[in-house]
Length: 212
Image (cartoon, rainbow, N blue to C red; front, side, top):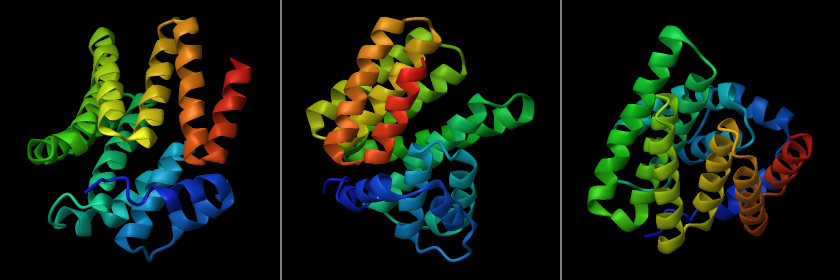
């Protein structure tokens, strides 16, 4: 089964969820696995990495023992890894190393999923590995992996993940001074999020594009 089966409610949340609501969700002590995973995804996509990490910690025990690559479990693994990468990217020393270790654990788990269902998970393995390569300053490798992730997501029919991958590729291109390429990739990411109905994300990226 496609792992994008829960995308519609998540897109709706990205269209409607304010920062204040997401912070309240992050501080709640009572999360079902599906609700928590949805919240992590929304928080990450809106750049609320500390709140997303808080919810990851709340769900860690139940997700550790969850069997199989069900949609909410695989999305938890993905966004836990992405959140770890985002926090590591702004950190130094031990905090950065901790983030890399958490990211590597997500990569290993996603690789196991991809062995059994490559059409569902290979693009996500590439994405997480691209994040790790960027953190290690292996920029050429990271570019290749993002591009592989994008090609595979498009071929296997995951437009929501494709928008995210293009956004991250745009971010890397921008950091390397490749402004024209970054602007074009950002435009394609925005179009993907718009098609998904993630209006708050579209507004966020449009504002950041205007500032750059």
